Length: 180
Image (cartoon, rainbow, N blue to C red; front, side, top):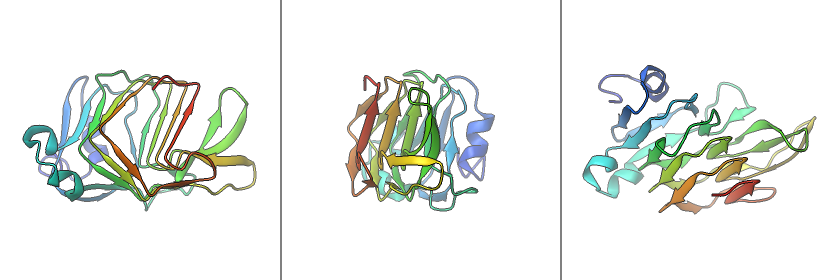
């Protein structure tokens, strides 16, 4: 439980074992999260109560990344499967991550809110808003997937509201060699 047992969500994720649930209380959390191959449930208290007001009150805010090239709010890229669930959050403030494209062998800035690559998580009942992946820098060809970028993956995306995100392409969602 965050913050009751762990003050930061990433600490709870790093301590979680396969199929654990990281349950997050209402609040605004300034973090850029990486699931690091853990098949876990990451959820707000919406998971247990089904009170939709908790989605707006449990905010994952990626606007303060430790490095400007790692600004995605939630990154899932190490073969996590459909038992990995992200549910019941407002996901905002992400600026995307400079990401190496495996097919074209070039760099892009992608996935402002959520970046999924080589994984098949379940992402449901979230509001993904106010993220961006629209700025390139030297060595980065382009930028897109302001809300969600999915590449070489097959996630389940259901009951999410994806709105007011920006990208040079795919302001809401980019599906690249994906079966979402």
